Length: 345
Image (cartoon, rainbow, N blue to C red; front, side):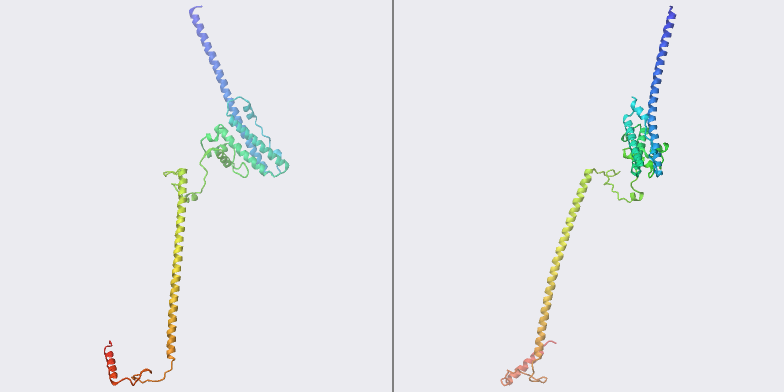
């Protein structure tokens, strides 16, 4: 073998080995891709299977509610071979989410059996129908978390617009009036919110008039913007101080009212004493006046023995007219003249 033939053989062998390696790699890649596609198809089959069972269950509940003499044959048994196959295989999947789907199937089957028994026995299926509708709402919420968020926990998803959830339900033909007596989309949104999914916007708690009529205290609100935010301890301390201040104010007011009452009682006593003293003085004055009047009447009632003319000098009965001399009469007349002259005009 010449040197050129040797190099040709080596080059051909290496090329053949490279081609074989590429073929093996391509084959392994194809196997891996097919395996991944099979996994995706199997997981999609799980969601498709759950969606079909939920839609059929919703339709059955509507028929039970619409037909008065509905029989148990309207409710078909629940089967989930796709879920059983995924659980039996060793594919890589979210086993927690698959367990939630399995529990959802168990709840659906249990509610369907209870409703079937109520229809078979001729009892009123209202309670069983409500339980079945509640299980359907749970199933739709589980289906949404499986399809959209790959079975993640609601607390791990983050913020989600509620209209996205409604649009998803519209795409799967879950209408607002699918279940009798309730709004299905609203119930599913509220159920997801109850499970911990952060849906925006939050539901309104007040009307516009109620909201703008509220007396808002910016300083008392812990989450108030542009305000002094108080910690719960500070709020408790402020409430305690407010209570103490109100108690002190009430005590002062009571003390003030007591002082006013005491002053009013004292003033009433003084007024009563003064009134009594005034009444006593008036009674004494009236008694004195009555006494003077009685004396005057008694004096007026005395008998008069003699009458006197005008200008006549009279003497008492016990005076002796014979004892007065002429000189005494002159002196007495001079004294009377002096008294008349000294009298002021």
